[in-house]
Length: 321
Ligand code: AVJ
Image 1: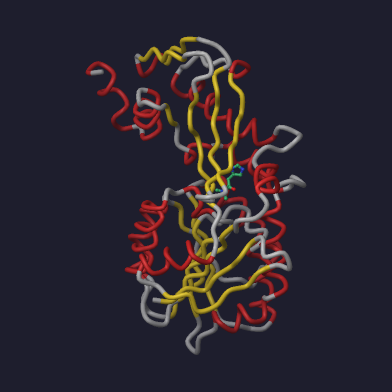
Image 2: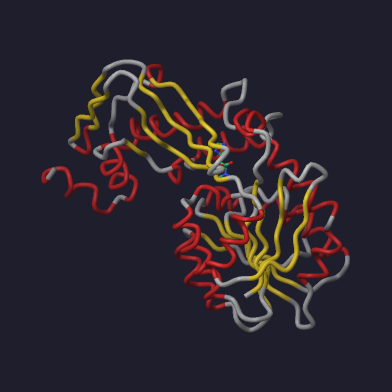
């Protein structure tokens, strides 16, 4: 271990991979899915027939844009800060409506990917040229620190797509606590969370027939091979998501189909796999009213509104301090 711990210290990906692959059981973090290829694969996931989340949230925002805009509205205008803005496809529904109804606001898209932010800003310039935007590049942690700067008028912090679901409950609470800390009494937190439903429906969303989610999951191995000089054989791992209806947690794994040894040169690391040993790569939490109430209460917030689709598959909530 000594030899290997020095090299990756400055590289968060290397540090995480080293730690995850030397742990029992083995893990890799889903936050590293999103390189250029991963961004593209996630775009494809959002277009999959099985991945209902995106379309439903789109529909909810479209059906309720009037009430949502009224809740956001403030005399002095507001800052609309979106964490993990992505391609902004869903947000544009709200942006277009807010602008059309002449609400005064600035859109602050935040994303870890510069690539994604640039695409978003250039599409906004074309589609909504009048819109005031102030994009911010950074991790959630960095940006949450900077949120303190937005205190001159009302802020609405938006976190769509059930992105919170990638965090373990304890991490989710810590994250929400930071948001609460950055909020004033008038500010809102607007969050979209995927709900518990028929387990088959959930599982299919993470196990699509065309194999895009599999490629997304395996992109972690490709990234290790490319960036850390590894020799993972993607064909000898299978993508295996499971859904636990009790906890509401979908967990995704890569499972080694044989006994094998993987060498990751730049970590000076030899990783041994037994046949059928797993690497846990992602959690996608599903919620119900008890778990959302618990989250809000733990974070020191109140739920003051919610919007859903006809099947109650997905929900968008307004939280206040
Ligand atoms: C972007 C975290 C909401 O967990 O549903 C999609 C990512 N992973 N398919 C999710 C994802 C596999 C997605 N989030």
